[in-house]
Length: 101
Image (cartoon, rainbow, N blue to C red; front, side, top):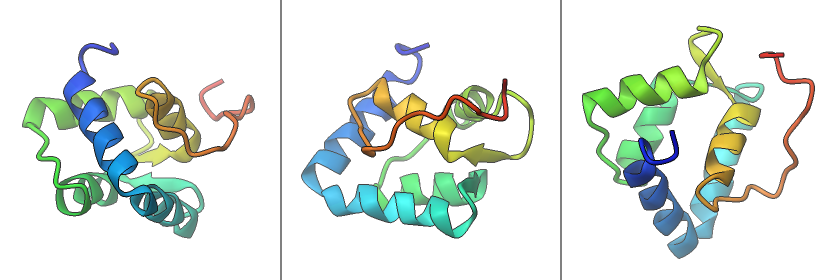
């Protein structure tokens, strides 16, 4: 799965390293929605703020990877886990009491 999202993950990593305040902005966006971000908001952030254009299959694949329970939103913990695989560190530990368990 890491290879499947490599393009997006590495682009996010480069953007966040170049502009660390964007990582803080994304975390704040999750917080405003009780750590559950809509796909629209996440994909809008990726496209408009980070300027990463997702292909349709990437949107579908990311949604499947980040929302295994089909809840129509992304939990911060799940996104944090995804990001750690690409060296993107929010500085927060992964929660063991995730809803997917």
